[in-house]
Length: 355
Image (tube, rainbow, N blue to C red; front, side, top):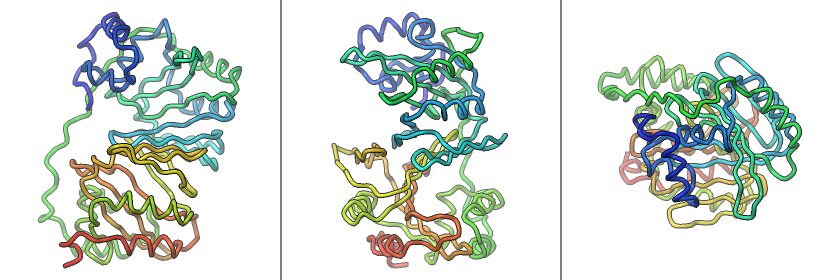
């Protein structure tokens, strides 16, 4: 949940409260005290944080010099962590890319508003360093955590390069605009919508269809028709993850927010449930997924020139995408048969099956 203002606590008060509650996770501490995570980090400027200029090109190109790091992208329901180097950076005004084997990102620069270099001393006395970036609402869009194998000298050079002249301890928070009433699906040209869907030749055309018909992703799958989308029973994300863990078939896991989408491609092995959390604890991929936040799961088919591409999509109670799963696939390749068969075998919701 995002705080509605940024001046509810002065920086000194944030630091005082933190000294009384040093073990709480930063994000949990911020929420418990009615501030944003960006407020929390900014309060530490001058002690354990440095404000940075948010220059996407400098950040991403500089990240390639750091060697092995952990890239972290999250939303309200999932934390997605990838370990490896930043490679194959491409910077554009509307979207930037990192296309490494391990770290694979789609970045939307307009959402990156605040940046900090942060130092934290862990319980064993080790200093943990990270670069942290936030949107205008004070929510984290992406973090880069150094590891033992990272190049500390390159990190210090990058921080010096990005250091802002503004080293104040507060940020101006602008809460995300309240969403208007969802479009009345009854007003949508369903036949026209389904015709556009049927004639897709690339999954990226889907975004234009959403814009042209002014519908959300969740509304789109509800309108697509049983040929292209069907709702699944609760628990199918866990079921799918356990199956791919057992079979070793490689998948793609997309998790994002308004500033970054992070992708894992490959097998998923070590899965542990802890309460509502589904945790992946593989050598280069960690994920922490709140299964109790899942309100609906859909199987979705999109036509492409290479045949249908099938996704498993989890949505929260507000109809927002939590995560999206595909079989591993590269441009120009047909979808893996084992992934398609896995999704088609997942139990459908009763009304979807009846339809």
